[in-house]
Image (tube, rainbow, N blue to C red):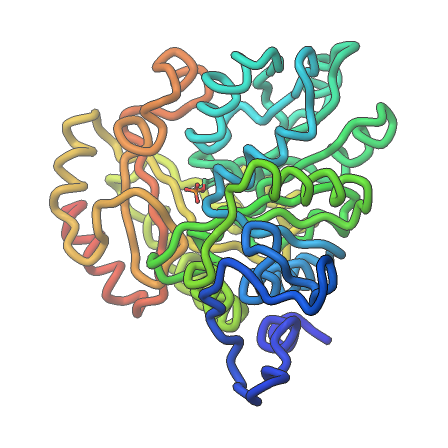
Length: 378
Ligand SMILES: *Cc1c(COP(=O)(O)O)cnc(C)c1O
């Protein structure tokens, strides 16, 4: 099956007992057993729930993976991946990762004795020179947030294979519609399903996909042992979102590219970061490992913090809000909002300046979005 067929059918056969075409929301915490230990695959909903299971099957198939695990948030999924490690282990991570990822690494798992190096993973030789004898994991986010840098996933997979490391990719910004890390040799994919997979800004969720059986066993064990699972209603909302992922991503790409081209042509804009513009320094790499791009655009306006703030107050269609990946367009200021937990000196070093603005372009009509940006820039 191809992408949108899988999105609509995998894990979603009509309900065996009623014929319901849509997977029911199984609001139950426990399941009747015929005799002690004899049941139909379900014992207790932290361990397994039919609605969540449908989501896990469907999401795994979209990433071309064998196993899926759903979580109550992207951070719960990321937490669960870190549970593969033990005190003393070292992780090499992309430096401009999602702010919450930086925070859980730096402020939570460091306390448990894990060690982290944040490096410019767009340069494979910097990954290699950051490796230590205790390095166990490579963590990459591509396109990265908010600078939309591209990490060469084949190189990350090669280094991991050669050194026996576990490679992890946060695929939230690209989605499996445009990028399939497992196919490029990556071991584990994580998502915030809050974003494009849910797609309607109405649910918080996370996901892990892997084809590696031993990793899956441990990750599933930790999912149950730690317990950061999504409820049936949240699982159902993400599953409903998946059905239209293909058609939405096509539109995010079309509208996003038009908005990016408009911004690039505007005299008040200093630079635009969008991997599908030929001006993006890694445009060729993006085209080698992705089949398109979502609606995430970052740009610097020609001015200072107060100019950026004024611009953000003037837009009308774009809602000033954190998060991304919904059908409605959002706008935000990374230095003050999503990346405030990244220390100022780290922000300065990585290029998250005070005039940097991030857009999550929705699927409204591009003419209206461009008109809104044009009048605010004016
Ligand atoms: C939002 C986000 C997360 C965290 O997910 P939550 O669902 O908010 O917990 C992780 N990585 C990326 C790239 C994100 O955008």
